[in-house]
Length: 152
Image 1 (cartoon, rainbow, N blue to C red):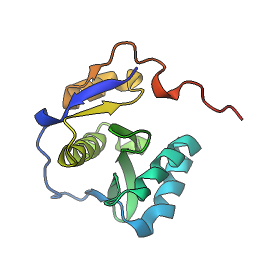
Image 2: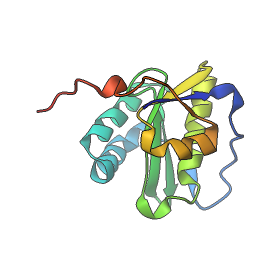
Image 3: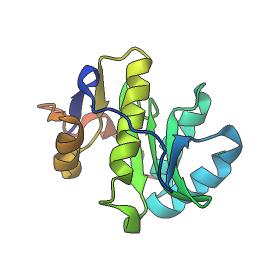
Image 4: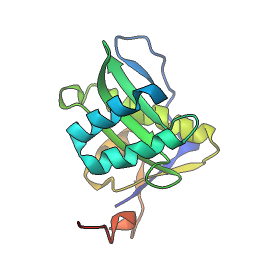
């Protein structure tokens, strides 16, 4: 199922004051990011993420520490006004990395003029999205845009 988020009621975005740096990915980092996403989350997510590099500014944020990617979050990739894909390295989950990437991306969407954002296929992570940004399920949104997929 898909979820809906009110962008006019987001948590504040804190600054980069710790060891982990949160920022937009740069064009010269495209191959590194897409390779990382593919190795951690598969080619479907890598393909979706690649669309972020067609936007100016690039519609993808990364979390990095000592030059290493810890996570990423994109928007306006799968569809306009859709958040995602987003992924965080296993050992950095439940440490606030995903929350920070989510909030940064949603603020960027708000700054682009959206009042609401859709989180596609959030079913298994509904509790996370509800807790962090008050996301609510969109009734009747299953299977959503991911139906009728190419199988070969």
